[in-house]
Image 1 (cartoon, rainbow, N blue to C red):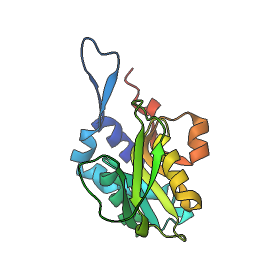
Image 2 (cartoon, one colour):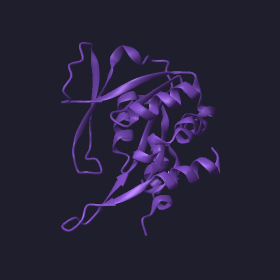
Image 3 (cartoon, rainbow, N blue to C red):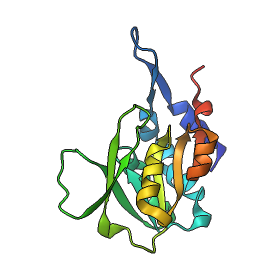
Image 4 (cartoon, rainbow, N blue to C red):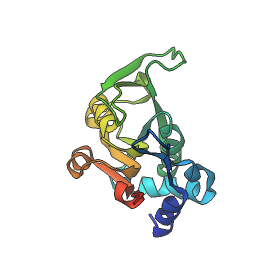
Length: 181
């Protein structure tokens, strides 16, 4: 990972103030997806975080994970598997394995599932996403995948250090790197 990519990520990121009545800022990551230099560098940079673990497949939760995951899979030369949220407006006509995710950063309970046939017993699975705030999705996917889980590569890690260590979360940036103050 280059310092140039880190600088590009910081520059293209913004916090949005929702105005009166709101007591928090909302992250605006849209600049990341607009900049071709960032898109070109993200896959290899995130892949490098776990190259030594030799993942055989990347799993990423929807929605943003569906953008970042394939970039990392391509950089690693492996396949990609979607982790779907239950209750979405699509039917998946294949056997799925599901896990209930404890409350996420919004306080919502989620259910994530992957197509059963796409992750085999010998796979080494790298979970990829754009942001880890609580580690809830990584924890749930680790439970779902068992010993196949090698860790989680994210663009931004805001988890407490103990959570990041427990879940083997590695990142390009931390929440402090994007501090609005």
